[in-house]
Figure 1 (cartoon, rainbow, N blue to C red):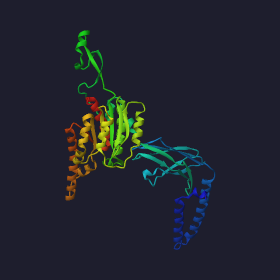
Figure 2: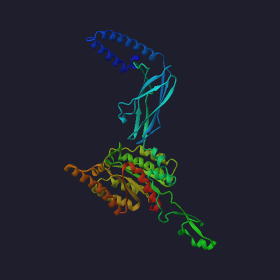
Figure 3: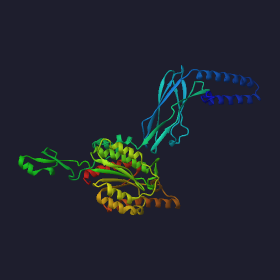
Figure 4: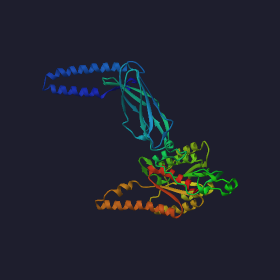
Length: 443
């Protein structure tokens, strides 16, 4: 019985059989075809046994290994490699079916290839996960057939493997910033002009051409009888917290990812940028409870702690409790910090319910509320309305889009910074806002 698990008859055999049946049917009208049909049966049977002997004689004629990364990056393409070796003395045709994780819901995954005799080949394909968690692979099935392609032998490799899917760590390399330079502009990062001096004093040095005349130290100049200027350095070790709302308002999907996952990916990148800028990075998530708390620090293991905390963000999308969030911030974040709050408001009424808590948080900290444009409304707004129903839909869409802008103005009225962005631009816009705040010395 074990033999039959590896023995497969290829479609070509059945196509040939159908052709022979047609010949027998036509021979009723054209008798000469009867002999041709009989000869065809004999030839097909001989080829069948010949192909069987060619493919099934010998052991370990095909070797294959699946090479997986240590972890997947959520929302990004992750490369999977298959190392396949052909030990047959002739060219082999392969049909590879890799049992990929059920989260991808791919029912027809198949790779066809050809490998020359005594050769090896690396076959690659990409997977793009859209949710965090554990992804389990099954067996790697390789179906080998000769050039006749009448029968195939199945080779099974790998007993299964698990790969965890973490927040998008691939974006770290893309947005890793030691300094803002011209090369960074291609990613949408902006250079922000400094306004005034909001920096820590470092030293007094000799004036050189190009130094800001406003930094001249006249007392030191009088003592040394030459121009001296104050030199400043950026303020460092300032706490920056990414606070992620994991309530039901963050469940909305966009290109396969939920708004929550976009916020998680952006939090990972901004935490890395914060640490590179010598500030302290921390995070927490909230819904009905406060969870996944990482205290803002600047240490070598901080990014790993944040990555693990973001990976473990779980939610059943309850209504978010902003009052509990305010109480937790009041109790545990005692130093003035920059708080990047990822949430979403669809209407002005939704904001007004939470506005008292946002105002209370902004009294002690520099609060930036980050929420999302509803990109699905753009198609309704941009399309020309031709019927009464389409006019109605367009007016409603414009009303919701206008309310988003009203929310920005309402937050600005109370001195609360905000970012209204699309999910795909979330990371870039958040980095730009952080750099702007640092450059303007607002924290």
